[in-house]
Length: 447
Image (tube, rainbow, N blue to C red; front, side, top):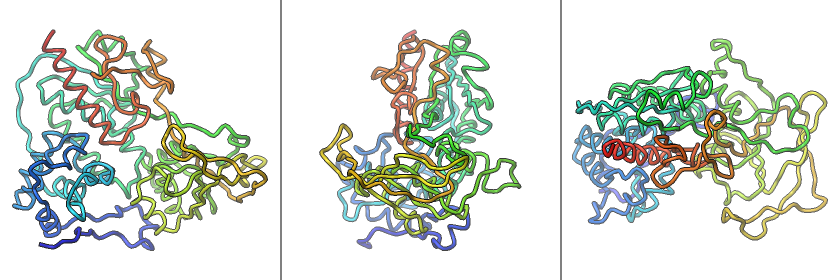
């Protein structure tokens, strides 16, 4: 048995900045078996305590070690209907892998990805209940909730505003991190379970939640966080200032990087500044790099405070993305188009509500960065459309207020994922969808 974590191959940085193919190539069969054999099979598996989806990690890894890959997938699917997605984008280093007592820790995410990519999903029939549930949004929370409900025997219809399912999985996460074929394969699996997905169906425009309640026994709202935040500084209305939401949607969903093969254009610039420090900022920078730009990320705190995953920061650095820390924009400069961004140096003070040290401007430290395009990636808020068509109680950030059972202020209406939390990882959104499904099922059984 080897004592080191089994590493996987990655595309060479010099090659991958010229394509949108997946960076991490995943485990081979032999690598997956070797990594699985390192698992200590702990009597009390701490890794499972770190998994929001409560997957039986110990059990599925044992099946991989025994080369029973279909059984391994069956174990995962009992708790998570999106294993190919989670195996790629879950922050395992902060969840299951962080709890692993082995040293080095088992690479649980790559093992989940291997099983999802190399095993057959078995469809089992279930007894129908005669109850109907509408799910609004086909992102991770919506897909998780709908798959749970249909396996409980309920009829489920998912309403998706866009022309493809997946929500943020499709429009937000770049191809080189999460191939859209994987998203479509897992959405198709959920359809095979019996879920109906209606595309181009904007709840709040074509029909309201009130209208859905007349036809369905319950409604689960999972419309995500699609409202981009801006800085509120001078110059944000200049040409070539993008929200990360628009920039990524044009490329990921509309395939603008393949223009004119696909009809959606994207403005390409020689020098781009990305503002922000999360995964969305890093994703935007790496997409821009692949479009041929010289890219700099500016972030008002230090690298250690960046919320982006270490792996994604490392990949960005390998690809030539530059980082400028302790830097905050104060004005965007230009006549009609962006010409530069004026910034100020920052220092770190005492921790704020987030637990990170608060950035404080340094007097008389202003300077300018010349650039032709700016991408603002400082976060996004809940999609406001639903809230405008139905009177639901909301939180400070206009997220839909829910209780511990994911019930909203209106009877039979539930919500989860980013629309309720304001911000969540894919696996946390899946957790919301699963728990909400359980609560809906129990409520329907009680009548």
